[in-house]
Amino acid sequence: MSTYESKDVILRVENLSVIYDGKTIIKDINFEEKDTRRGGKVQGQTIAFLGRSGRGKSTLFRSLTGLETPATGKVLIPDIAKYNTDSSVIHLKEVHEGDVGFVDQKYTLFRHKTVYQSLHFAMRHAKTGAKENKDIIERHLKDWGLTKVRDQYPNELSGGQRQRTAILEQLLNSGIFIVLDEPFSGLDVGNILNVKEAFQLVNNSHELNTLIFSTHDIELAVELADSIYIVGHPKLENGELATYATLLKQYDLKGLDLAWKGDLTPEHLTLIKEIKQVMLDS
Amino acid sequence: METIQKWFRPFEVLKLEQRLSILTIWIAGVIGYWFMTTSGEKRLFPPPGKVMEGMRDLFNEGLMVHIGSSLGLCLQATLIAIVFSLVVAYLSPVPFLRPVAVAMSRLRYLPLTGITFYLAVMVSDARTMQVWVLVIFMSLYFITSLLGVLKDIPQEEIDHARSLKCSRWEVLWEVVIKGRMDYVLDVLRQNLAIIWMMLVTVESILVAAGGLGVLIKNSDRFMNHGRIVALQLVILLVGLGIDLFINALRKVLFRYSKI
Image 1 (cartoon, rainbow over the protein chains, first blue to last red):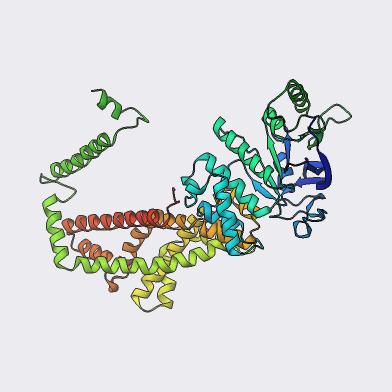
Image 2 (tube, chains in turn orange, yellow; image 1 turned 180 degrees about the vertical axis):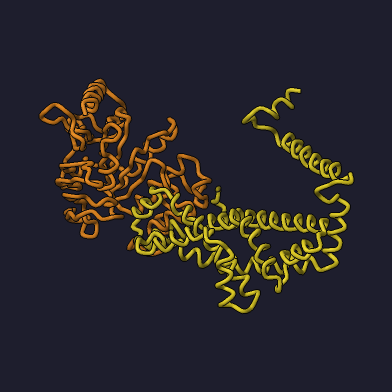
């Protein structure tokens, strides 16, 4: 059994709902995630959201990043400005546009900025000085294998380089949270590996780093995440499915001793089956 | 034989030399057709010899000066029109100002003659009037095309900038203005054919300031067909030259541009 400790709340979503033109897209979303501590190892959080198409995952993600103003409820994240590494006390604040990094499935970048310029732009609000910013960027370029393409534009990058740049850019900008909307969609096996490695780099670089991603690949979610949420249309009392989406189920893979295993075990496969059924019923 | 068959198969991708061969055949065909159809007594177009003669006459009458005058007018009007159009189009994402840009785009259906009448009342100098007639019409076309460029910006690019803590004005600056600078040159190039045609028309309406339009008007008056066709060729070649120049400029200035 992997030993870990769940400490402070790092993400709290309260009574969240989003309505577009009178139509409720998501409703009554409530959940919270805690900072995971594993003795002697820097361990960030990886949270996966699964759900069938058209079940409001993208809307939920836009709300988590502050890009969408909810009709009700709020999203609370750690206030990094008040975070003190010595006391490790986490104060929560309401999320605003730009607080949480957002990577869409196309790995959008500024088309007119080179890799270096993009990362430099991402750090423009950092409280560190220009020299330190430069050092941080150089170090990350090296760690993420992007030094050779530092002066290339997005249209000159390979798929893997583009993915790493998009994730790194958000990491340097937002600090600890990165939301990725279907980051594995349409990727070949090599690119999936690239993104998985990028996840690892983010997770291992800071205790509070938290990756939230959606995917249709249940196996991948079970393999990578330490917490999985299923989003779908709930069943109403009359047996019909509601027209709005909400959280149907949560699986804490840490508690189930299925997190951080690397390979899939028979227990993982049982879980995959169960998740599949929950999704089909929604 | 199989190669020739490929030339007539839809969506067939050919090698460069084959494409050049097809182009050569067409050019030779057009020139041959021109020679053949203009060799008899009855003819619609002047023969190549007459066109060459017309070209020589035009050179002797200061063709290059007229080309310079037309290009000068084009440049002057384009600069004013593009600056004005950019301001209008770039401010169109501001909801309160959007109707202005949309209305201007719709005004492109206005007839040229109505505008020239009012301009003639307001402006006395022929050259200034030429410039402003062109500026007004070019702006309407530019605004239409620029609004199309802005409309095609994917929501993902806006969200990406917002997720990087860009204020709304920063989004406008980074995604719309800086991020689509190459598109401005492309809009200019795409509209060039209309602009160039309009320029010659405007010059021929207001003959006092010279230019290729004046040469056309004079040749027209004396029914000098050789000169008219020679002039048409000159106008076509200068227009194509500007098109090539702008496209090359876009590729040199914007390495990331793949439109």
